[in-house]
Image: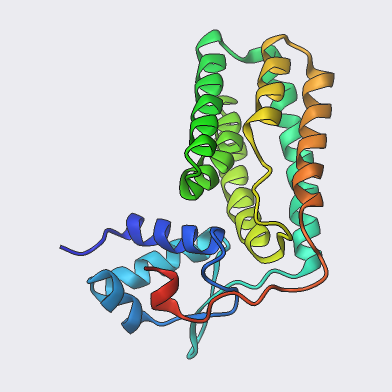
Length: 221
């Protein structure tokens, strides 16, 4: 039995985030169908989902390609993230429940475990997942869908432009943000979030596109 559409999407997404699949590479339907042991129709479904997430561009009569974000787009994405996420944490300071504070603390604990175990895949998923969880807890479908798109685009940008092998969107700064929210300190929470995202952006070398893998099968292995 072949992979599900969701599994294909996640595998491609992680291959980009883990810097194994380079921007600009063509995602050939026939090759992907062979790699995942599925029909080309299922591959097309997965590519459509990746396009919605801003990770893939589909060019008529040419095919699907991993998006290649420009430096300007990278800066724009982080500018919008700072604006949106300051709004998210400010709102949560006055509305969050004790149960949701526990959810956030539990999430940070999972991030620490992933780092201790040096699990790159879990680190990447949980790191972005923290920011998505904040948006989910607001109860706003709009904020959640906006953050989902921004996080997907940020993952691609980070994969292309990160100038270190480490991932610094980590649990220490996340934990500080959670505690500021728990103590109903909106100014501190927004300042911490701004600092955190500026820290992540500072790890990017916004001057060149890295030459990542051209080998689709190797990248998705």
